[in-house]
Image (cartoon, rainbow, N blue to C red; front, top):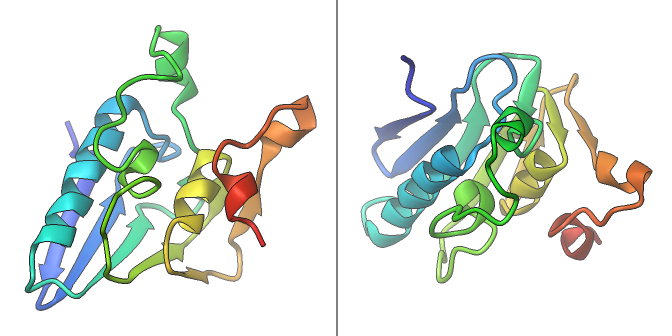
Amino acid sequence: MTEPIIVETRGPVMEVTINRPRANAIDAATSRIMGDVFATFRDDPELRCAILTAAGEKFFCPGWDLKAAAAGEAPDSDYGVGGFGGLQQLPGLGKPVIAAINGLAFGGGFEIALSADLILAADHATFALPEIKSGTIADAATIKLP
């Protein structure tokens, strides 16, 4: 089984890659791993910058794993330190995070990207908050968008 999150450190830079085949959707277990990774980044004085990206070229992240939801995972699950995706509610980060978007960033995936300090997007990257079409609020994204 592949690791859902790949972490590589090169000097003072930590690269975090979402590695969930098919779409890089995030379930509660993956979110907890991401939270632990970003807490480690926050607490390590040798690390100065983090880059968040995703495996593959089609999806950065579509957000919450709806297959996990269909299997019974509640939307208010314990997503770990930092909230959904490990970044949205991480206190005292104080270091720059760059989101390198290489595909579709929808819903919660877009919200995770908005939690970064800087977004670098490939030419084919697409951003969307599809919750709006069904009349629901896009959780954190609506308060982060200018």
